[in-house]
Length: 210
Image (cartoon, rainbow, N blue to C red; front, top):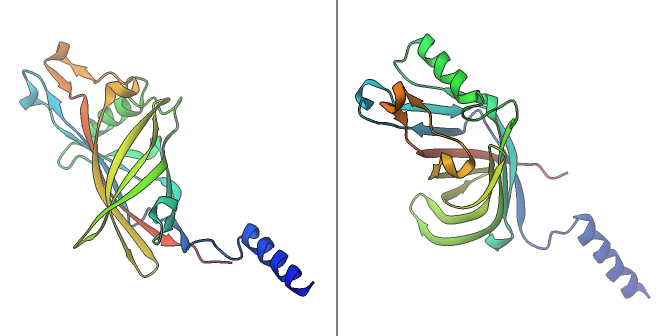
């Protein structure tokens, strides 16, 4: 009878989270140390008179559930506040930055009023070779941008140091895949390229266990 009670107690602990099935740790993002940037490029006959743009996201949330023993049990969620994406062009005048900012958040591009969040949710994860700077991991997931969801593959380098997890990588996206028509100026003499680059270095801290 005693053994039966002990067995039932163990089952209760497992389902209550008291004894994890694997060595999983929950990390929460530290936006103050992280960097999430987008490079937007120009093309067209008079592209030399236009400027490439650098955008930086300031507000994002979510978590990483990381299982170092069984990486396939790990997961990632990331929510970016669309209105927190700022034009960070060095050398641009304040007037030009304000114009680009208004266009980016307006209904021609992100339409932040209708689509306030950009969300990535992982659906799978595989581990590759270990490199000098960390472990090579491929995230498979769904990106929701501008009201459209698309599956994507995201290669990252992950390093765990003490209670901090650092993930670095980059990915290229086409705006038209998400229902966004690249902006044109002067009848198309200068226009934004469809393909843009997203670069990131995300820092996350382990959440203390209760």
